[in-house]
Amino acid sequence: MALTLIIIVAIIAVIAFYVIGIYNRLVSLKNRFENAFAQIEVQLKRRHDLIPNLVETAKGYLSHERETLQSVIEARNTAAAGLKAAAANPGSAQAMAELGGAEGALTQAMGRLNVVMEAYPDLKASQNMQQLSEELTSTENKVAFARQSFNDAVMHYNTYRQSFPPVAVAGMFGHGQDASLLEFEDSAQIQVAPKVSF
Figure 1 (cartoon, helix red, strand yellow):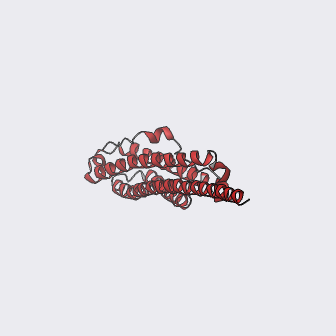
Figure 2 (cartoon, helix red, strand yellow; figure 1 turned 90 degrees about the vertical axis):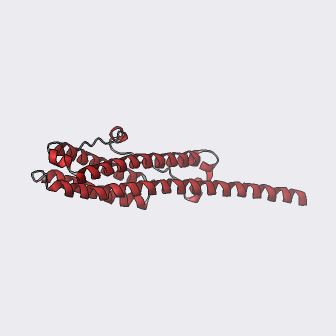
Figure 3 (cartoon, one colour; figure 1 turned 180 degrees about the vertical axis):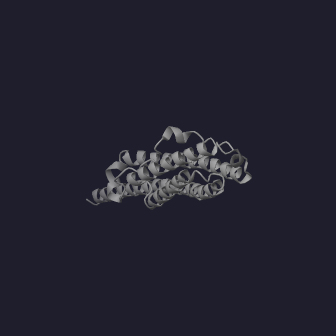
């Protein structure tokens, strides 16, 4: 009788330690993708901070293009708001979709601005514009790398959470839903580094 009780207690202890291990792994993987999103947030904030400087530099040259400049600023503000919402809940499907859409709209607005600026050779030759464009291009590349890192971390989390036996206990520990990838509206376009020629 005592031996049976010891065996039962040992089995329960092994199961408890195993479940604790699953919980700890889920927490670790969730923290990784949240940290990866923080890296995206840093780069997107940098991008959002550079855009007003770019627009301000272009204003003097593009006096007839106020509508284009205004659309860039509006898209930037929408993207900044989307980033703030996504930072509050990284991995949320709705937050990631809204951020992706806002960043896609900002990329399109920046593309229209680049097309307009092509018609102004003095602007393209401006030292400030060249420096801002170089910084913006570098930041765009960093955003792409950070997004890939985030999506990889989300994939590892989702794969572990969906596998057996973690799937059997994940919901009990607040890990009942998959985290969402961050995909921009035009994923093919964002994969290509932006072409800025000044």
